Image 1 (cartoon, helix red, strand yellow):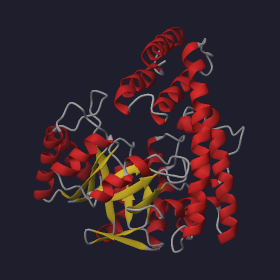
Image 2 (spheres, helix red, strand yellow):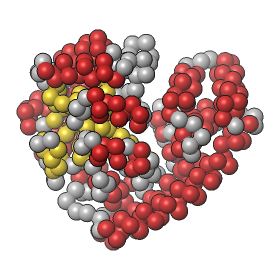
Image 3 (cartoon, helix red, strand yellow):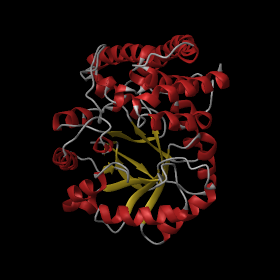
Image 4 (tube, helix red, strand yellow):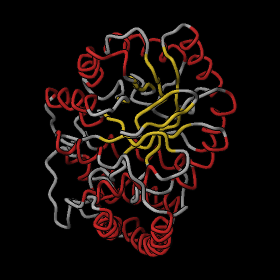
Amino acid sequence: MNYRTHDGEKISEIGLGGYALSGVYGKKDPRQFTGIVQGAYERGVNFFDVADIYGPAEQILGQAVAPFRQKVWLATKVGWGSQGKPDCSPEHIRVSCEQSLKNMRTDTIDLYQIHFNDPDTPVEVTVGALEKLKAAGKIRHYGIGHVPPNRLEAFFTLGQPFSEMTELSAVARSARQRVLPLCLAHRVGVIAFSVTGRGLLTGKILQGHVFEQGDLRLMDPLFQRERFVSGLRVVEQFRVLGQKYGKTPAQAAIAWVLAQPGILCALTGPSTISHLEENLGASGWAISPPDLDELDKFFQVEEQRLGEEQKQSIRPILSQDLDPERALTDLVYALETLVETGGATEEQVMPTLGRLLGARELPAADLQAELISIQADLRKRFL
């Protein structure tokens, strides 16, 4: 395992995340995660990341690392309130921190991260709450995640965050333009998540793949329409590249993330020990500069092709009758496409995304009416 240094701290360049324990990829066995945590530590991983809303993840992680607590980083997150919306107010941060400390059986959280953007709480107020926790010894460092670039710069200017957590993979590359330059300018380390595109870049998810009920990927835009087809073309590039280096597509994909400027750690979420070992095989080698250049050329062509296809795809989603079987998935896809193609900002679409996710709880008789209403609103605002 290779390590990277930032602000005098040494972190394994591949970390382990517990997002799957929230149930987003189907039901998981906590005992299996405990074994993976211990196996990761034995293989040199010293960075472990969860969140207060990942089900029992904090408790499970705290118990798993107890025998070697002082030798690893415990990272968790705060920012989702009891009202079902982002909350980065001082009181919520204080109370949540105390609960996370108790959950993980520790006196100090190594990295406490803002999980969501809270537009109702000024950045300086949130920073002040984090600095108080740091001064009290409750946390060692704090970081930022899921915050739009304009708010991100405010956090960097008003506070002293150790890191920024962002999605980055060969099939989700926008952070290279929107986030990485900003982090480099402010000397903030970047922790990348979903580095294998939620499994797409392993090469094991092919056209026609069926996810189990409850798996988030059933409605994830990355696995829909032309976005998924584009992803499969990217997978093929990494399959060929991996063969050149004697690596798997997943290992080549993680190595590509690690080659990006400012990356401190690539966060992975293996479900088995063999999966863990494959991910860790991305450490200790590097893709050559000429091969990185060739990938960039491929990405430029692919982005232009995908952008044109998505613009053609979004209009019928918003203007034609919705397919009852696909309406929810298609509208989520339309929202992300609007952001990806520059048709809308994250701030503009987040309220609608909240409506869509909330609509999943409606009775079938009311669901379609709500989706039609959302479609009409989007059509009026963005077409």
